[in-house]
Image (tube, rainbow, N blue to C red):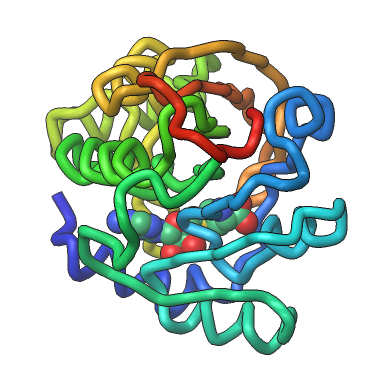
Length: 226
Ligand SMILES: C[S@@+](CC[C@H](N)C(=O)[O-])C[C@H]1O[C@@H](n2cnc3c(N)ncnc32)[C@H](O)[C@@H]1O
């Protein structure tokens, strides 16, 4: 499989010029993420959704991304946002420092099992008990085109669902049970799921799966209601 360095290099070059496409679902926001929540937008890219949340009235937002090029673009496009580049774990925040985390179209860019687990586990550390993880990603697609693609790449990397794009990107689609498992292993319980359609980075349409999950444990005093 492509090395972790090469995967990240894509997001410093070709990937940093792309237009990201997973829309927020305002019904899920209204139901589970109060406007008072301190929200971490992990894998924020150029701050597209951080900016949208700010426009919706969220006031305590932080976007973090591994790509210097994307964070630089985000600061240019949204000078008022708090956007930070950070590559390794742990992130420089205390346990339970956030009321909620967004993880939108990030796992699809992380083909390796261990790297995916590390991301969701870190969000499990950072979201306070009673807080919320709002994840949106691309599940396995069942059309002939995707099946052929997945089959070709399983030979190479041993994971069904991984594929490359002609511009050098490596992506992964997931069995829904895998996404649920990652969330559960990180200490969250799934509250709600919603399936829909989304435009992909390369102009196709794919199914998406949204998961709202609550961090288990007893909320501390003074925590924002979730
Ligand atoms: C498709 S973009 C989505 C960006 C943003 N969440 C949005 O929806 O607008 C995927 C993001 O994941 C980030 N990313 C790629 N590999 C990553 C990794 N190994 N760990 C964390 N983030 C990664 C990229 O830098 C990019 O910003």
